[in-house]
Image (cartoon, rainbow, N blue to C red; front, side, top):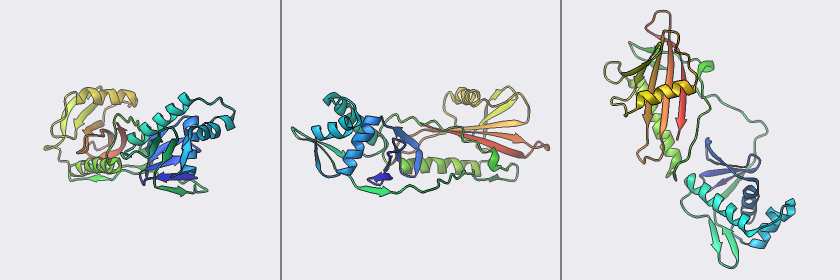
Length: 262
């Protein structure tokens, strides 16, 4: 059973994670005690819970020695996790000399019997001078790295808007107007999708090539790189596409794409 909290966060007790609704790439793994404490809050949502009850149900019943310090650490961890995932209104309330109370809109969601994993295929890019055919088996997600550096306001909309901007840029670019050669790495030419690449873009693109272990020893491969931020400046998405040219040398045979969300 999963639980959707305030329509923003999904709690999965089995995986011990809090994740953005409809975006499980942005997730936080909880410690086992914190997971048990959150289970108690969800079970008794809206009720006052004493410290003794939480210590008994989350520690003693599992054979672990209870302590107020451990409970305080769990409460702090849960609050920080919710804030990091965009839940701005406090949902775990401290009751002096009583304990705590959770105030949240919670919707249980039964797990599907079979989990269906859907590969996301990048949109095909076409223009008179440049045609990129993306094969599904060549799309590489490259284990996207998610680093939550600060609280995110409306995180889902921000993420969608940034990815949309990148997609539009790729669809509408013109080689003379927007693509700019910013460097060369072995046999690969590195182009910036941005009209004005940010300082250090060439260095970061080469670092990404190294971290993803892309082979630039053979000719016929171009690299397209961009860094985008939403209007609220809370997320940064780095996008890199490694496109291999066909035998004619003018069109691209396929591309591998990589994204890092910070």
